[in-house]
Length: 269
Image 1 (cartoon, rainbow, N blue to C red):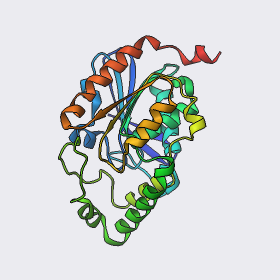
Image 2: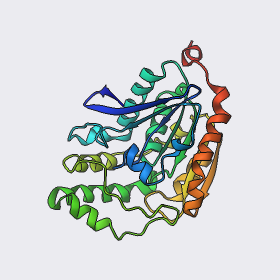
Image 3: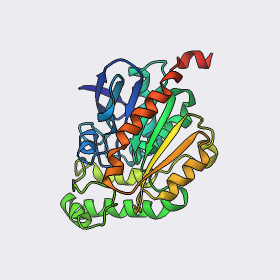
């Protein structure tokens, strides 16, 4: 475990170094790398022979954060990611993987630094563009619930909400402290995926992993992304067994794109 300073936060980081291609793994909103293991969204557990970097985003898990909603905009989380990659994998192209907010962070980072990534494995992309408006309103309401009634009231309110059929049946609370959670929600409400013109400029091999019947992560976003990203494919999970195959898909993606490993510095000269 290690600590890494970024503006306004200290990130909790771990690097599993088995040599080989560099990979960075992110998590979703209100989650963490440890919570994603419980939710069976830790795809890195199937990797070997790589240098796998995992970390908790600012305000999540063991990382610190401030009560500043702007800190948690997805574009700002992308800046944190790029700082980490510059430190741990300087000058190298990295394979990125992550669900929901992690997917959004990776896309923003790929727009900001197109030469940084050798490939992407994007999981359950969240609402975006037209579908983002209603979700942003929902996040603002959630922030108010936490502020006025507390974290337990928020968790209780969502306990009986229907879950996607492919998701594991574990029920876990946010891996975020109660004082920071409203700021995280408001930061998410201020966020969206990069615009269409920016998305189409991303040109690396990309696999999109989606699942059915999840209004927060609609198939429509995944379909739009696979249409916009020229070198992409879509896999849709309908059962937990389908999701259980996702780590092997990541392993295949990393192996396929490993030969694209190159020095970013050479590309920029």
